[in-house]
Amino acid sequence: MQAKAAIIEKQGGEFVLDNVELDAPRAGELRIKIAAAGICHTDLSVRDQYYPTPLPAVLGHEGAGWVEEVGPGVVGLEKGDPVVLSFSYCGACPTCLSGEHAYCPSLFPLNFTGRRLDGSTPVTRNGEDVNAMFFGQSSFATHAIVRQENCVKVASDAPLELLGPLGCGVQTGAGAVLNALQPKPGSSIAIFGAGSVGLSAIMAAKASGCTKIIAVDLQADRLKKAEKLGATHVFDASKTDPLEAIQSLTGLGADYAIDTTAAPKVVRTAIDAINTRGTMAIVGGAPLGTEASIDLNNMLFGRKVIGIVEGSSTPQIFIPKLIDLHQAGLFPFDELVTYYNFDDINKAVHDTEKTGKSLKAILRMAA
Ligand code: CXF
Ligand code: ZN
Image 1 (tube, rainbow, N blue to C red):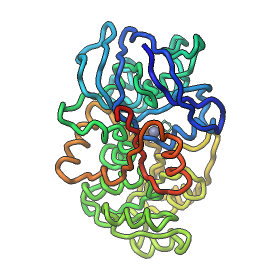
Image 2: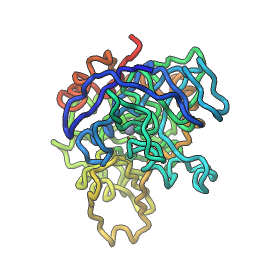
Image 3: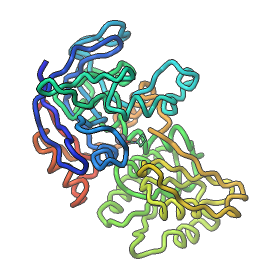
């Protein structure tokens, strides 16, 4: 069938809207009519080729929509079902079978090669292959072929247009706290970067009963939002030394720190900002090969540095929980969102990267 897709043609280029042809879903796949899709920083990292997904490609990995066609062998999903789309995992390896789907060793081939594992792509333009299956979904399009592992079925009255970002950015921040770090009530946590991932972590820290929730950023409006969503203390790193400020506030350092910036200097500060036996988590994706320094003696005293991908989530379990938390008023992630029409994708990117007007842009395909 024909679909409209936003294609990155060349490194650093704008999205180009064009008509493409979608194959029928193969075994284990579905065709989804996309309602809306969020823009995540990783889409822009791939545009810039910090990750080597080949171009031209259809990106987009925070989609939500309705099942339109079900391929052979798909279990538990039917035509018309509303779904949130998340990352792809194999579902069959020991890591997946032990419930650690975010750490599937096939995560890179399934999410970043722009192809199915057999090298094929379901998207063509004028008879030429276009790379797709980005995060198993390529949802910057009116329709997408996805793997069943990507799909999280949601209630028929769920606010579908809002939910796409739960599939990546929001679950990355919230899951780092709720699934991976699991801070005890009364803990202190410092969150570096108050973008959509950091703000999701802040809301989750509040929901977990953390009593010192420290946000560090360079932009006053983001810090204001951080305060609104649960930060108890905010530091503008362009005006205040965040390390000194965190040490003086906590005495011995924070129990937990999360870096969402993937900037080596910030990562180093976040490690230095934790107490002995504290844990610092890296959740942001840096260009391949990026390195950061550590103070070896500091590490001797029981400090831990861990990487957390996609909030250590099993999307089919965690996303419904986030929806419940949202409905209970405990996770107001709608506060992050600005909506755009699909045709305005380049404006949405501009507002995300250049003006800071948008914390989490959502493109409406069905409008
Ligand atoms: C990505 C970061 C790079 C590894 C896969 C997950 N996170 C969100 O887009
Ligand atoms: Zn993402």
